[in-house]
Length: 322
Image 1: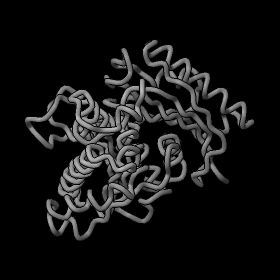
Image 2 (image 1 turned 180 degrees about the horizontal axis):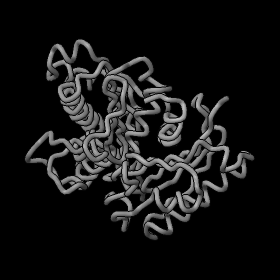
Image 3 (image 1 turned 60 degrees about the horizontal axis):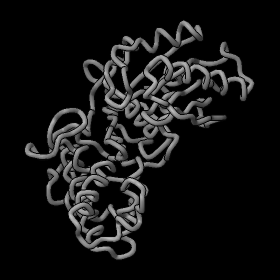
Image 4 (image 1 turned 180 degrees about the vertical axis):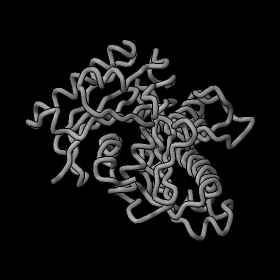
């Protein structure tokens, strides 16, 4: 018998909800805006409606589901089912998400950090298959990660392990959204790259990034587009992006001594441009024994990795994995 579950990938801008089976197949999913500015209970209502919709569209019954899994931005307490205080979800302070969903649906509910859930999916069905010590990094608006140690998802003491984006790579660096200074995320995320590009444009330097952006806010993708056209400033920015990613990845090799690191998220779409540059820094800075045993690859599962991972929070229990 193939088990099925509902997965919810809760993000700051969108909610991705779907039905997933234990083979890692997404049977049906929908994406809707989070509308986080309306506060937690409006967002939870949207989550509930999305769950009912995917259940209805696939013709399954709630009682046939192994449960509902939710990947949420942290910090959170997965054991207690409480979302504590994620910075990109307005007003979410100590929200008992598991309790609310359990009351609504009456079936098993599991929540975890969204990056942990994504790491679980990539481990079971992506580039982590067969790798007992594995790290997944997502580099997009921010930087998150999840860690598999000896074949087990590592949650830490209170479900907030592997906050990879918030280790310091420059104690005198810019302020991060978490409140600290010089975080990996503040240097190497897509948001950071866009911010550095904006600084360059505002300084009046000769670059076509502003032309590509037009009246729109500058995004990381515009930097890569400008670099493809030979823009020297954009090329320099990408060199720095790869350097910062290399620093962080070398540190991660030291922290966890993994056999493989898989990089996902929006920035990974430019893997061919970044890889050699990233590895040039890794090869200079990583501890030799850690580097020799670890390869760095582009993640496999793409934009639905969080949804798949959320469902696997439940399916892993019914199938006895992790």
